[in-house]
Image 1: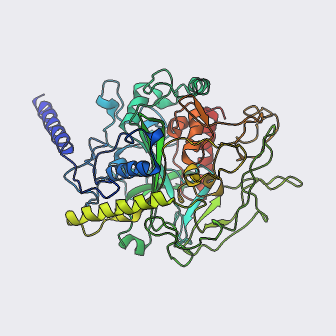
Image 2: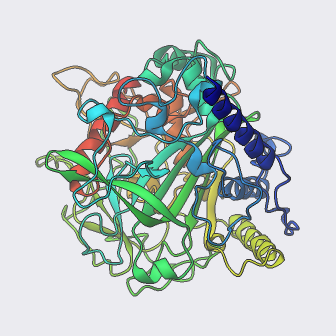
Image 3: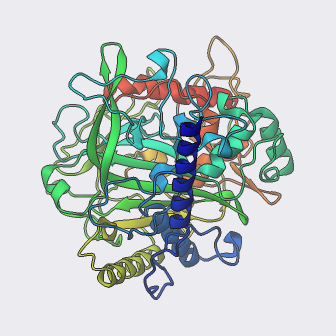
Length: 580
């Protein structure tokens, strides 16, 4: 008994020490002209309120998020910056603040309760070390190591268990494209912070029992979300943050140039008929940050990318470090060029706005360029038009919508602040000078005419997309919703009376009425880009969270073609749970 009490006392003392450490004032540098400061404090809202903000104010907010969330973390407790460390601390190999968030499978395990979960535990056990518990296909839910991989006692904080862009395509960097799987394939993960987990755990929704249908009816009837923190309907608390990020294996040159934030990641391969894991040091390519704030119940969506992501086939940068377009000003965004037309109001909408291309099988020679391969999709027989996705390699030559000048200016100011901070703290260089804000959606924008492209001056913000997270044509021009796949076993789908093309993007419901994907303050909006896509989760009853609507995570998605079926199964489950 005495020994146990001593252990408890020592653990309590250690916890107090770390808590005191985390409460020390964060290292600061003089703010740049834009007011961007190097601070470990995550901002809680845009001053003056998100609906009335300017893009410049929203960009500052996004950069403050990025800096704070990429601060070195203490590890335990999670979500906590180590203020004895500097932003971009040389030689630091521990987790960053966002990396200590719970992975989606730590919130929605494939079996049982979340690791550490107990109704009586502080924060419902949020701060236990990471454990990734998948479905019953794995012993105790634990994915085994691959042949040649030394088993690890604690898995990497970065758990890359997604291998596609929402099941539509797989993404590659052209460098060393012929390497074995995963070669330069880009893999993804999703995480959420303490506020997100506590809300789910306190309501017992970790097993997929959240009241999605009732919430969806409330949202569409009242044209707004329920009160934050509601325990009867889904509405996350203010301060909820969800993260999506993209990583890949670096070349030897890239690993040594100091341009990438690197860290140990876990990814998955196939071993026989099941998955196994490997752990290696990879580089971070992109970071999505979605935060629910008091004035933005629709979440603020900010997306960042690494400066070297977009290269031409010869390896030259297409944009500068701040996002200014250097070359390919008149080139088509994709090679080969992708053409489409908007779906029209019909019952069902039969004119496709998905990728249409002839011939259907295409290819490019990427060299050092980004490229993607669409998930195989059936092509209807003649005389129906080709509504399937083009097969083969599609190379990226530039963004469909350029980064706005306001964002470029914010990036320049942030990089100046980072440079001043580095000089003040004796840091010769850090990778954070090579990351840039792509854009930030801070209020819904309603497309004025369904079935027509949005062409306002803020079109780049309306269609916000990260070039390595939302790359294919569908995601670069997303608005409205994805029409669900054709009905199965003769059953009508979402009100459709006829079969509609799979993956149709449309601004209309099956009965021809306009579709709205973001409801706020008694208004309805057909939003594009990240917010519009996640708005489909709002109208599906999960408060903009695909992590919640996905429910229990039964298996990781292995790298390479073997992971396609797993990705399609995951999104089919999301569509089913949300009634699509």
